[in-house]
Length: 331
Ligand code: SAM
Ligand code: DTB
Ligand code: SF4
Image (cartoon, rainbow, N blue to C red):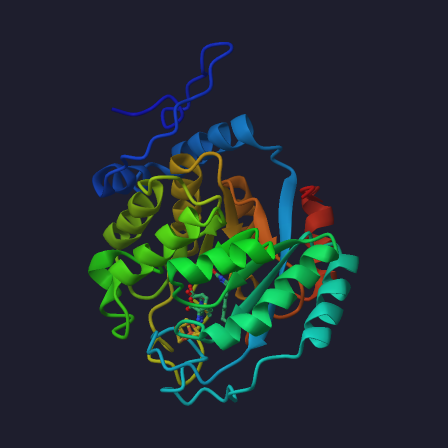
């Protein structure tokens, strides 16, 4: 049965709608198949119950270790297996990371996300990351990292350093996953998410659409995210950025409305989570981004680069946010 939020009804005065953790792929697929106006109305209704619809959370990304990754993720320009022109670098020094974080804070970002092209960090890698987390936190920003698979002990170490969020994506449905990554399993991903949660770090977990998956796969991924024991606090929905040299370069582009539908389904099924309109904004029209915000996206990456690919230039974003009346969400 639909919960009160999914049907767009009003909760009884003084009661909070129940958060569900039992979404089936069938149920999410039915949401994705709704007439567009109906789906958008339901998403807006849920969004406005939990958030100020004109506020968007702003994060900035920094690649603290670029390229040379041993994994074979078919979308990724940083895999050492594909000739994409991304050169493997050594980890960035602490002072350079902190200088970039200061710049991002001064440009309005409230969360700083440090990404590394690792399968999983070695303990000596964490020796370098721990002071970065502590240093960014001391600048008054929220901290986020995405470093690959973590053991329980590594997650605890990052929690002690003051890490607020850990990003680790499911990427796609369990059924489609083996077409995209063969060097680690879906179970490995769920295990890392459990370690992060147990360590008391907030979870940032979502996926990529536009990889040639079916609507059923998108429904399955959203249902899996929404059925985790706790909803991820942050749910990035990435539109595949096609990069020359990766196996997914040239895959048929996804209908933009289907992307917006996926955002709406994430909003409806994870009502209190921040849903991030993540990679792919540079390739989207302003109108498509506006539809994604209407569908309930309320977080973006700001700054001219993601990890290795471009993000909208700050002046394009400033103009878009001004035209839409979007203001930053306070941390
Ligand atoms: N190596 C770590 C890992 O895979 O967990 C952290 C960095 S990895 C680049 C973080 C996420 O970026 C991936 O899980 C994927 O969802 C996303 N990503 C990577 N390449 C992308 C692309 N070309 N388009 C969209 N999203 C992408
Ligand atoms: C996420 O879900 N998207 C971000 C972040 N987590 C680390 C990464 C997007 C990367 C896009 C390709 C690149 O710039 O290399
Ligand atoms: Fe490596 Fe992460 Fe890219 Fe996969 S997504 S190849 S693990 S950097």
